[in-house]
Image (cartoon, rainbow, N blue to C red; front, side):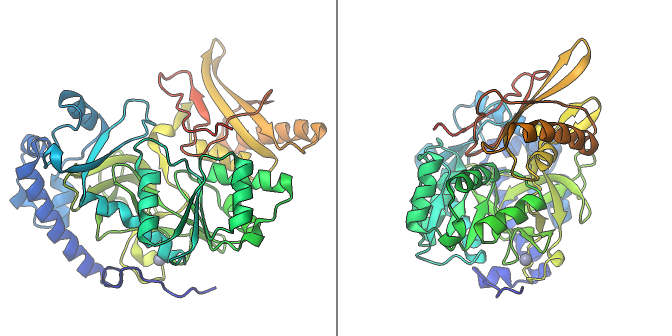
Length: 459
Ligand SMILES: [Zn+2]
């Protein structure tokens, strides 16, 4: 099914790739020069690397000469120069807001101080709304709690929704039953949820006999977690609308990549999250090589904001694993390259178990292939017998006891075949936490700070 192209910024979205790269080079040169002369943090980094702004004559010069910035450096700098660190190029009086990271890595929260002009970036969800077919006046239901401290996520989303003139419903504070009741009453056009929470709402709607196809949703906006194609297709069928998605981070200030009109998944294939490359410079580099990867390969996303001055971002190593997709992979004609939808994962979520790299989303893929499993929690620990993986599984309330036992055995077999290691599955004795944001289903007792469950639903 072809969709009409919905350009939000016709000038930027109709640049040729060559024109876009020429624009990026001009912006990068200006920004590197600015950061070098105005930010103590970056001047020290450039001096240590022996690089001067005049040496950046091509995009490759930028990629090869400017050193990466890591979370550890950032945290150290902010510990030495509290609270904002030495990267900022402005006086505290010019700051308008700061965002804190959610601390999911377990090693601390970064501060990202922003000026009023920087907050313009935070309105960038408007691209994603427009590309997904959302228009002014449409009802936008946000299932994430707005009171998530100073996280960029919900805050920039609300600012963007105001800019897009959406009719905003913040219902994150309500229990899931009341969220569904509100949706029945007000017919959302756009629903924003993390995949695990959408799953929670789906199971509850099934229990309550609610058919969400009657809402007339135009799209569901996903974020923060990977998902399988089967899961996406089932969700589209159940909710009766396409899925869109965003990639964003506190470091990036907001959401900076979205699927175009083709959506996150269509015809059994994953779409592309097009990066807003006129606003931010994105690279995908190999973890070991630190060289740009080829199309279709996985690597770490590295970000440079072109204009952010409150806390400039230059070659920020995101620790996010993405699959690089060139702009030419999409037929929409936009010059923006990006990454595969539904597959963004965090490197520090990967667990090494019995010499196997275990990604939590691979386990999710097995667990949530059908709707029998409502939630699960996994633990990894060392015993005298070696490393052990214990998984507690909560089934949907209406699944019969005999079927539960059979499903546990099937899931064990599928996990062994798919993941390559044995896991001890048992039925959970009591209900498990439900996640509204930042899903953390795993506790690795071998690593301090690996327990990172955040923002679970309270009700
Ligand atoms: Zn496209």
